[in-house]
Length: 406
Image (cartoon, rainbow, N blue to C red):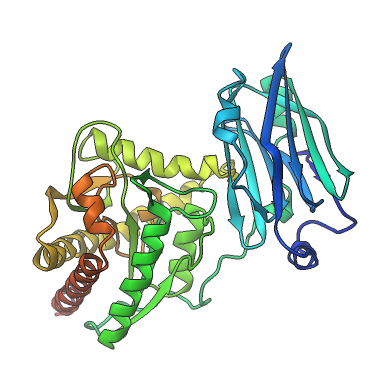
C-alpha cells in the first residue's frame, strides 16, 4: 500500500478544504532569510526554509524517477534560491518551485537515487514558521513501496465545458478551437533575454482567442488562462470535454545547440523528423516529471488499439491542418523555419480523435525571433495568419468529408 505524509502547519485539512484554508490567510507567505537552505552530510540531506507565516502543507514521494514533492498553500517563491542550493548536494539533481494550481504552490526535489523522508516538520517561531525536511538514503524497493500521491493531490477534475465530442464540422462556422498555451506555473518553459515562454504563450493565446472570436466563426477554449501548471494529459482532456474540432498547442522553445529561427508546426509521429525535434518532445514530456506529476499508471492495451484505429482518419486531417497553418503564418509574417512542417512524439498531440498541431511561433534562442515575439504587431499578424490557416483547413476538411460520403 502506498504511504505518504500529510502535514498541517495550521489546524486545517489539506485537500478539498485547501482553497478555503488559503483564503483565511491575510496574504501570500514569503520565504525569509536566505530562502531555501540545503545541507548534505553522511548520506543525508537536510532542507530548510523560513516563511513569514505558517501555511497548510503536505509531503509525498513519487517514483520513476524518484522525487520528493512538497505542496504548500500558495507561496511567494521570489527568494527561493533553489537552483543554487541544488548544486550543493550530490544526492539531489534539481529542485523546482512554483505555482502548481490556483491557491497551491509546489516544490519538487528530483533525487539522484532513492531517499526516504525521515523527518518533516513546520515549527512556528516569532509569528513566522520554519520548514525542515530530512532525507536519508534508502533502497529502490522500499522507496517504490512507499511512493505515491495522495488522492487530494491528483486533481482528477479537468477544467472544460463538459461537452461530448462533436461530429466532424461542416465548414468553418462554429469551429471549436482549443488553444493550449504551453508550460505555466511551476514550469516556466524556455527563458531567454528577459522573456519567459510560459508568459509569452499565455499572452499570445489570449490575443489569438480575440482574433478568432472577432472573426465570428469560431468558439475558443484556453487550456489555461493564468500562470498555472496543467499536466499534458489534462490539456488533452480539456480539449475533448470542450468538444474540440482542433487542438493547437503554442510554444516558443530555445535550442541548447545549433541555430534555428522562424515558425514551425509539428504533428504527431513516433519517429521525429530530426534530433532537435526529438529533444524538444522529450523536454516537453519531462516538464510533467519536474512538476511532480504521478505517471505510474499504464495504458490499456485494448485502448491503444482503438486509438490507433481512430488515428487512421485523424492523422491525414492533422497533416492538412499543419500545412494550412504554415501557409497562413507565412503569408501573414513571412517568418517560417526552412523546414516548417516537422514531426515528433509530443504527448500533447496524442488525442486520437482531434486534429492537433503544436506551433513553435519562434525560438527564444534566436535574437531575431525574440524581437518578433516581443512585438505586439508581429504577434497580431501571426494570430491572423493562424486564423486564415484554420479557415482554409476547415473548408478543405469539409470538402474532403463530403467526398468520402459520395
